[in-house]
Image 1: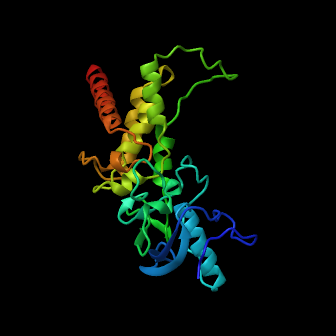
Image 2: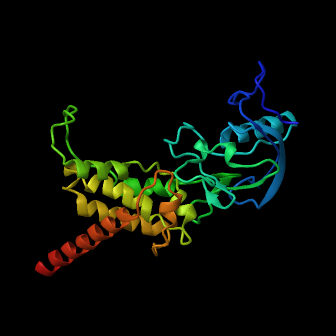
Image 3: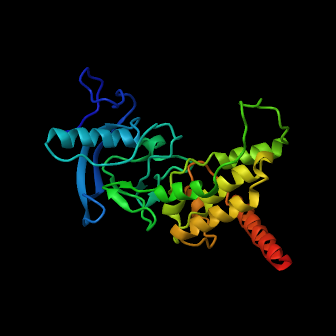
Length: 275
């Protein structure tokens, strides 16, 4: 029996007992021992848990139970648990990060569910995110995109004053909106095509909107888009990525990226024609 209560020997990460308790929660979880191993769903029961527990705390409690029964714990990604790092990556009842919009898995609480519920938990399902184990996937394809151009090359010397370059507020606000992307991969997992256009566009737009990013604007866009296309599917404007994004990043950034990519290709073509 698994019960969360305020107790001196309460498992680390388990919240104190306040509010109501949910009972008889069935967790149907994808288990896979390795990248090349066959996987399957296995079901577990949480007898009672506070509705104030986060979803990841609930998985902690499950793992405490499994370890206590000499069974292997469920592997899943987590780090800051504050909706910042982008590490958590679960499909919950078929939705990236679960039923609450604008929320990473670590910010989802059990009050979004009911007693006697059956919750299906899967890893991200995308060819570019191969499963490592259980609910953990390899998102290094995102790293390849960033490595190809997600930076500004500048010999800055010492750190300049923050207000040295004046930036109009609408521009800075738009850049900050794009910079909110935490790279979790929910956009890819939700997209029927497994496309990474929202992620890539957010990273491109964050830099391309700022004065510091103008020198490499078009080469950056071209490099990042073409690296993206090596790993991910094509965008056909379903809009699922925007709906699944825990930071609410708009698909408008995809239009900005496509415009800059087109301009980059036109510039390259003109340069070839001159030569």
